[in-house]
Image 1 (cartoon, protein in one colour):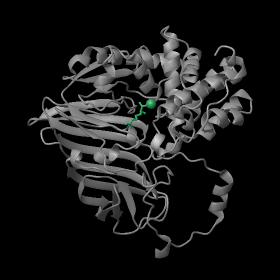
Image 2 (image 1 turned 90 degrees about the vertical axis):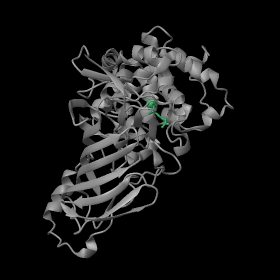
Image 3 (image 1 turned 180 degrees about the horizontal axis):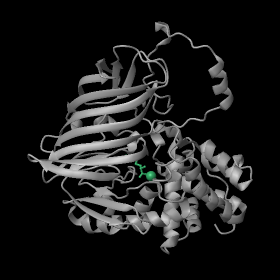
Image 4 (image 1 turned 90 degrees about the horizontal axis):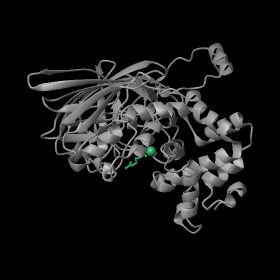
Length: 472
Ligand code: ARG
Ligand code: ZN
């Protein structure tokens, strides 16, 4: 699902052109990447996915995953063949019901040649039958499938999908999901969205999850293990389902004390960002030593050790802020990561203020003061950090500092109008840092090119703004 702006003039002109008869020569292969300069092989060209239906079976004892993906897409060019990003072993591919030939190439490309070429703009159904042991698969030397004592979990950014379903792996192509996973009785399968049902038969329980709003591939998640589920409803009426590994050891209490506040925190964030955009909510903690969290849509992934020092509601705030900043409005490419991380960090600063633990301005001053001018921290440019620094601390901390600088420049009224208006304006779509600057200029009525350049794009420590310099 890719939201496009339709130019009425161009459409009218196209309608006047005579239909061009399709010749074999007009059909060409879709590109093996969607065109992201940070990650040239990620995503694919030539089609746009609207829905993934994943019907799977997973055996925790052997880490074997098998099943069928049915992908609904539409071609965006006359297509002779196309790619999906995937790592597991494929036994059969069908395109519009007919058997298609396929081969693998590169690090994670599944190349599919349909029996007959596909015209531009037509619906396509792709069925991929597959199996494999995800923990045995590596691309570029790493894995995003984390084995746990009781199962496994797929969660990483930017790449997580290749280990469990074939897809167009880039945030530019969002789609809806049905994820149905059969696991041995006594185990649970956790995914995004609403648990439609679960039922047991012949020793296996099938868990049916539905995520019915556009969702980027890296935000789709699957965890299988032995979990305790809790359910509740937020004040605003959103059903909450959380899942905790039964084996969190000493971190169990702190994890629950944090994640059980998900509903309260989502409602609090809605006061800044507008209504919570989805009809499902929660969080889950598998028994993994991974060490990071991820804003998997509607149901963030957390690592036990992030609760080693007690409750960590700030982390919950961060992952839930991403539901607006990152999930509802997604990056157009991975270079735009500040759109996600700068805002999620700023939300943590607002929460700190709310909890009486220091104001956003105090935290901004602290970040500014704690990195001297020769600190390499300032060489990372949050507006274009490079793939190697995509999740550098500077993207988060200097990223949030940039927002405090913006707030001081345009005033609270315009600043908070922007925080609330942005998710609504680009809801379910994609946007860039340049889009945000334009939007902020429009709402504030102020030229902001210099401010954005200084705080996001210069590889050096910005001079303290005059108004603040006195206090530093
Ligand atoms: N968006 C995630 C967060 O800020 C970043 C996770 C990055 N870490 C990783 N290993 N991919 O919570
Ligand atoms: Zn984040």
